[in-house]
Image (cartoon, rainbow, N blue to C red; front, side):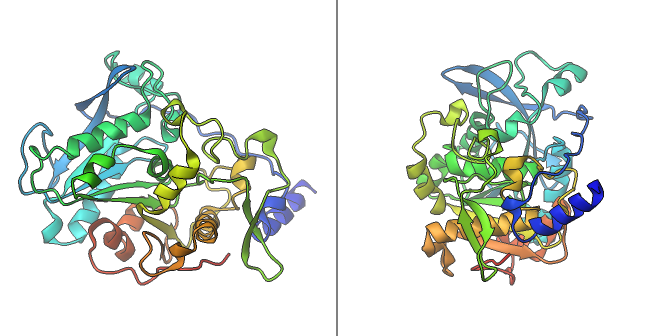
Length: 370
């Protein structure tokens, strides 16, 4: 009987995800320390204090010192790891993408920050001034446990270093990209982040590439439903989720200190004019995938990564019809036949087009359907 209920629930979720009662949740993944931490450290300084962020920095697969001058660099890619905090893995996926994009991009500066957690700091015996976060809190822009500095402050510091014209005198474009948990962080940062302002004001193009995160930040209480004709519509879901439905990560209530005084109506207007590409693998359909958020508030966004991404882009289009045009600042691209796999996503033709303007993506979707 329980199995039949769950199967029926999942079937209904593919049609009306917000009406399906919650199924039993899988046990959370065990917290494991990262096997290695990058040696380079970047100072992150705010009015609240100072800490250090570990990161990889490479050109042509060789580690470089970000205190030196690199006149050959015209493009930089900042890749954010997923919830496993495998910065080296994210770095390798991006390195393959750089290689596959063609020789003209081989001088791309690749930066892969490592957002360490307390268990990582303990196992690797890291200095006390290394920023470390509660499990998963870095994805949401929360403050570190040891210093009141946000992970978004840390991204600000990374982009500020890249914006230094003395170090990178010929820089023309920067891409901030994240897959899954990293995509979740990039999407929230694209809404509230301040670090890209110096780049844009100096004429450097900044693009955010959001690769199939588990959830998205909504600007209102409505969530996806299907109308009588099977098209995506939006309404306040019947499941209130213990008031978590519009709480930060899923909505704009109670944001982290970094955005505590934010005017989200103004931020929404800024966000839709930012250069954003959403990449969705058409096979990211498993509602029980280990990395998929199965909380009530997440399930109100849809049953799987593919549905949630399509629904979110349609949500933005309905609020801002200009996004459904060929020249829109935000675009939705599909990667056919790919599940939640960072390497396959970034090295696909659409991934290369998003990161390096290498070729074109032929699966751009203007008005996504369920």
